[in-house]
Image (tube, rainbow, N blue to C red; front, side, top):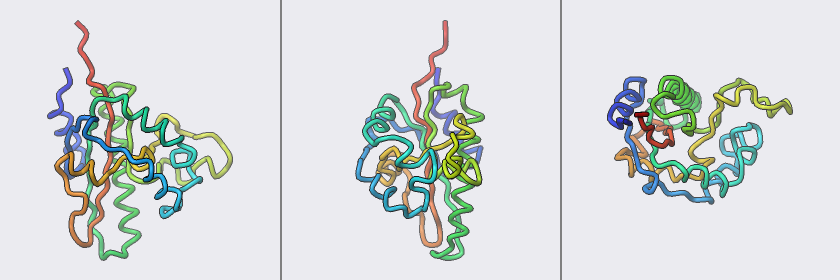
Length: 187
């Protein structure tokens, strides 16, 4: 039987600052979040298979996410030199994506092979996405899309998980999640 406390404990052991299991009915989706992606603030729009517009249409991604019953939400908080420390933000983002990959690697048995892993920002699996070279994804089994690409209202998700979305000056907070169905033990 699935043990949410054990899942939370393990994600914390792997390096998350906070973690919680949230029922999917407490997760709000907003298609307009994709406009943030289209504004290309992160520089990845149209340059990664795991980012919009290539990841899929908002309605299809929302429908896919809503098929799950629960979401394990976790966060990391990175310390910055100041609010303009772009290098520190990128380093903290990479640490979050490394954590997300570690969660996938170590917890597949717990969540099952059909769980949906979502990270923060772009995939970052490869130094240069194969999309930029007009090639198929090199690592589709390890590639990550983001919560925002799936139109998830992350600030509200933080609240539903009992976490702070903003954690003070000179910090950057990233969120990751695993969407899953509880695994049933076979009799």
